[in-house]
Image 1 (tube, protein in one colour):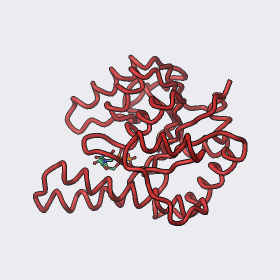
Image 2 (cartoon, rainbow, N blue to C red):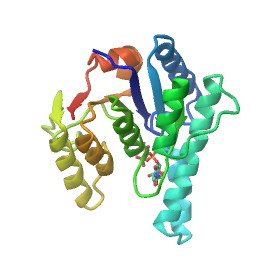
Image 3 (cartoon, rainbow, N blue to C red):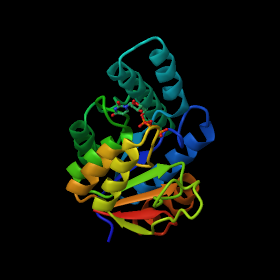
Image 4 (cartoon, rainbow, N blue to C red):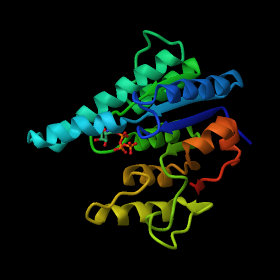
Length: 226
Ligand code: UTP
């Protein structure tokens, strides 16, 4: 059964200023969900533009928290762009998870970006989902959660995984030099403690399933049982 709310984290690799068609397509998918009565919060990532700013500032010797704040600025710019694609000019981008949750309760929709240094927009999505007791959809540039780096031979995609196992995989990958995992470790912790059912899938999969179809599990990604 689908509840009243959904939270969708659209990674910056999926939605960014370099791919205007996607922004329009995302707006259409969100509008369709809103028209069906689903109250939806969308959290937008920073993508290649955030990475460019961060890399230049790092070379300039800036501290990591300042780099995070630059990244947050870019995510919020992308959120403003999606608001325009949704026909909502002049809409403020919420600055905290509580503000986003409150906006969704009141207005039925909110689009936000990052909030505080030290995590990514996946974690913001998980926090809002925890507050709303809603399912979370993470749309990313891989097609689900794998038991190891998907480029390694023999890597196996999970259809379902427990939140505890997801958290273990994310923290293990984080410890490796240069290691990165599809979901940020802070997000996995919140998914586990908030018992947030989470769907992790690719853009193409999300586009064909739509938000309601994704929540019904009609996709080829991974379902995390919170
Ligand atoms: P993203 O959420 O896009 O991070 O935020 P990401 O996972 O690196 O990017 P994709 O989705 O894989 O492309 C961009 C950057 O902004 C900062 C972090 O530095 C992050 O890497 N950020 C974002 C924060 O510090 N806090 C937030 O709440 C969000």
